[in-house]
Figure 1 (cartoon, rainbow over the protein chains, first blue to last red):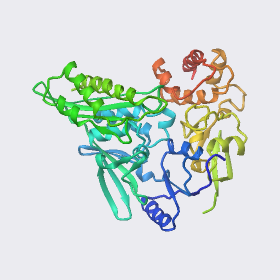
Figure 2 (figure 1 turned 90 degrees about the vertical axis):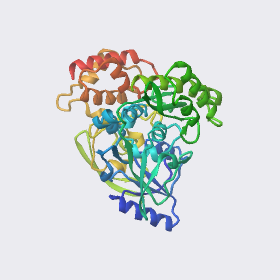
Figure 3 (figure 1 turned 180 degrees about the vertical axis):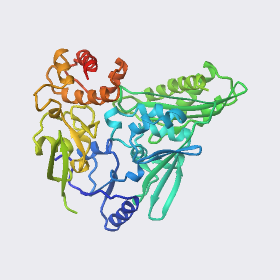
Figure 4 (figure 1 turned 90 degrees about the horizontal axis):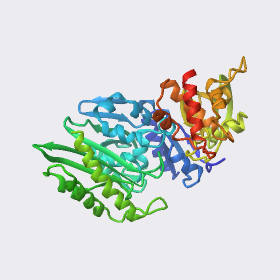
Length: 290
Length: 158
């Protein structure tokens, strides 16, 4: 038996989940919520995580949906990543999210892994982190006091830690539709196909009378949480697109990153260099899609 | 709450009812409780793909879920590929033999499960699409060229 013992619960509604989490908290039982488990199951098996209780969300079919609501694509937390990957709605109206989804693990992992799980797990190397801060995705969280909505900037706290309280769950992510005339790009670098990225970048921008505007640049994999490189954005805003300004933006973004993660996959300097190169490449690619 | 739970699951067309420990992975359940050793466990944390099986038609890692989570599901493992009446091998199995798509054979069941999902959705995949579908499978004999040939051949027959 690989994981350490735990009590297992599989509630069938969000309401049931929340009251169960409250009860476990009152009883001083350390509980963890399990979505698709594609990141958390290895942690259980390696016994890095040893919760006393596991609350499995896989019976919450009420959270398995992808639908259009005006200018927003609402994705239920338990929709699988392969459903997001195959969604004609997402491909047509939010191509940045679609492109990022294809980088997550491999097909067999995306078949089981959920969209909500990726956001809530908040691995620094998760593709969705940079997509969230670039697109300003809104997270719908439900707990004992009802529902609240948190924007991406306030959602990520630190490594594997979000604003979700121990008696709350993420129920939906609300992704704005990409406005017409917006260019986008998503690139990352990993040692092998499907591995966790050492660094990655998500960019959107518009062109206004031949000048870049509304530039948004986020990087992931380099700090505990995704980072919006506002200095680099300001450098590009108002400028005509070109290699020169994009290189300067890359350099600026690389310097903007405070103490990049250093591990066996890549040193801090190497990650900084990746940010430099990937930001410049993404800006150039985004312009071609305006 | 009990640490054991009863589940019923259909594996390769056969229904099973078993009481399982809630912390048992699906891979261990298939191998140790049902005696279906064709599903191999390599890394046991989702990297190698040797334990891939089909759950309700989708290829997934059996090491990355718990047996209790598949209550009510339809599962196919490598043992379910062969035609049980005639004994004939599945076209994907036959193609792996003909094109020498296996050496030691440890990774093979996982590769075949990824292939089955791919060909089910896309009967005429490009090489690029094949590589994406099997990107999550590791072969330590590094026989990838012959595995690609096997899948190309299987695509002409499935």
